[in-house]
Image (tube, rainbow, N blue to C red; front, side):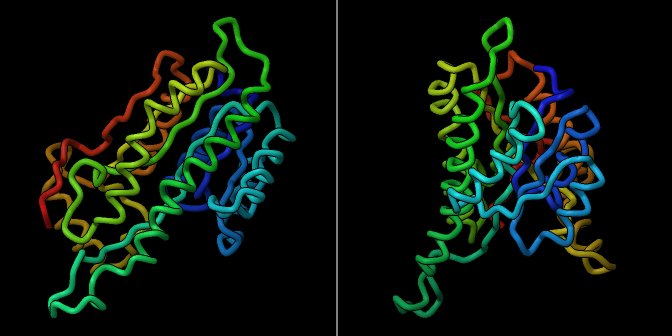
Amino acid sequence: MELNGISAIVTGGASGLGEATARHLAGRGAKVVVADLDRQADKGEPLAKELGGVFVACDVTDTEQVIASVEAAKELGPLKALVNCAGIGWATRTIGKDGEYSSAHDLDVFRKVVEINLIGTFNCIRLAATAMSQNEPDEYGERGAIVNTASVAAEDGQIGQASYSASKGGVVGMTLTVARDLSAVGIRVNTILPGLIDTPIYGQGEASEQFKERLQVGVLFPKRLGFPEEFASMAAELLANSYMNAESIRLDGGIRMQPK
């Protein structure tokens, strides 16, 4: 699929993996909607302006805001790409140490993580794909492509990652099914399972660098954290390569996460 001249939505696009992906797609000639929370506007608006796209305040669990992002993309060009990067992490053990019901994993927290990471991803898929289905198909019937972000935690989640692993496992689990659904209208769906990627989530400064050095010990090769640009190039390849469909691909340097 040709990326030059299309419009693309990148959720969570104001920072981290989303920012790198937005930059990469713009470099390939796509017009990008940087879709992120309103509180990220101070980062998202200048980024979108720099890239020649637009910023749209978007909570992926809010249907009207997702539709607004889709409509903004259609104004820029034919919407043919969606990259779902929005998500949150959480670390809480399933039960507490005191044997009290009250110290068990907060169920509202579990719901929130699943709501954003899994349901939010599907919300964006269903609405963006609806718009893509109205595109003129290419000679092979293709109308668009979608890339989701899961995590290696979907397969080897660590202690305390019950909600996160469940949400990301759900993204992996629906990839084939949704790809089959959307094949009828020529839309491909793939998912990336990133490992340890060096994003602002790890903070900055000496303590942060020492923490990242400890993390990278478990990486098979190369012995470092991944670069956001490596995620972005993978996402772009999954969008552009029209024979890539219904796949969930680990991008992790060969790491297999230990229990803790």
